[in-house]
Image 1 (tube, rainbow over the protein chains, first blue to last red):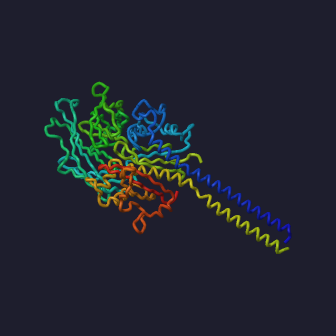
Image 2: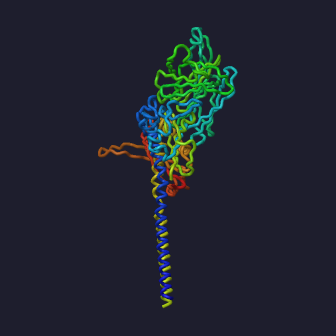
Image 3: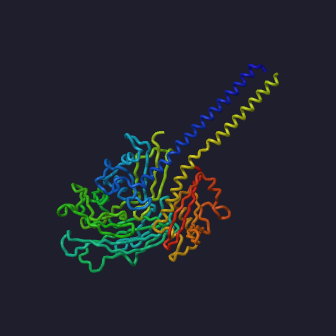
Length: 403
Length: 170
């Protein structure tokens, strides 16, 4: 073979070898960097969720202090001041709820503030998008049985329990408190002299393999005590607690009533708002401003509210200039209080309306964008958290805004 | 002369093939990322601790394992398995070991003895003999372990250890 061709062949081979080697080395390093770049999303998500759930924020009572707003909140965190690990403050959580029904939360902390304080939002742009979803660990669905002619309310209820993954929960303890709130007029005077009280009964059962059970109250219905003078009205309400080996959720169902009033609890304040519902006349509603509070330890507490106005005007809600009322509850609400309700009279009809805290069944859907456009470049981490004795499932989805 | 030239070309081709093969093997060996294992393990450890902590609240383990007299209920291992299966996503495998912690004082040293309490395996991956399938954990992408110390209503101290792995790799 001609030495020239030999040299050409040898140089070609060497060039091929060196070229291929360089290509391989280059692609190897860039592949490693790509992997590292993608993988770091999860540690960021874990750190952000830890920051949200395991730190209190500053000032530490920012959830219950109405003077703390988006401009003077120094640090963000939802952890309870008193509780243990993954114990969340309900006051802090409720500050992240924007709208309930048609009621806009005046103390709302927007996601941009949270983003600023956690370092994922800067100079009007998000470096990471997020969605924080908090929901009941156990989803309780109640189906009313037939209405009893004697009591004009159901005497049995079918309860269906699933968990946060949608699985049916067999062997869950279902504990129900069925109570009647009765309004009466002991002096026989006008409407302003009416007072109310309650009486209730308990029933318990275990869910079957399908996660279902029936609660029977036949023969032991809650009744107005004998000797009550001038009974005006009675309203029934079912309060259900489900416990599945430590995981606990609760559900409240006022029976037989509709109302044009929606409620929201913020710290020690109860905000009532007129709600226009089609099919219900827009008449004024009169409120009994003593809150009926339900706790995660299945207690019922009566908590009076302060009425700063003269006469009855502060107890009135209508479509006009009294469409929003804010009541200061006399006693501070502990994290154990999961709902506060008010008795409402429209004409001669009485109903009861509850505001739960946090909201049921989705406690919070807090997000940087109205929709997630992360696609597959997102990561989701989740934890079980507690508020009072109740358990909730918290899920954080994080995505990178700039690749 | 001509034969020597051909031999040199063959030699060069073979050596270059060897070089290419060496680089290819090196590439595949080096490119296996270890970062993903570290990152998921951190979250998985927290998931394990969070699960045990949630069950420990409101006397969950007491209800699961003991009767009202503080005696183990029959089949508590199966019940514990059912509960953990219902609370974890289906792509996570687990193996739980429950130890009884006892302080041993033999006048020379004090130490805590851990004695395994579960006679049946509490796992969602079992081998043919009914034991936890360790091969499944080895094949899984990420492994993590978390422990929780739990004092029962009857003041028995348990150490509950959960081993978790994610199926399908990182």
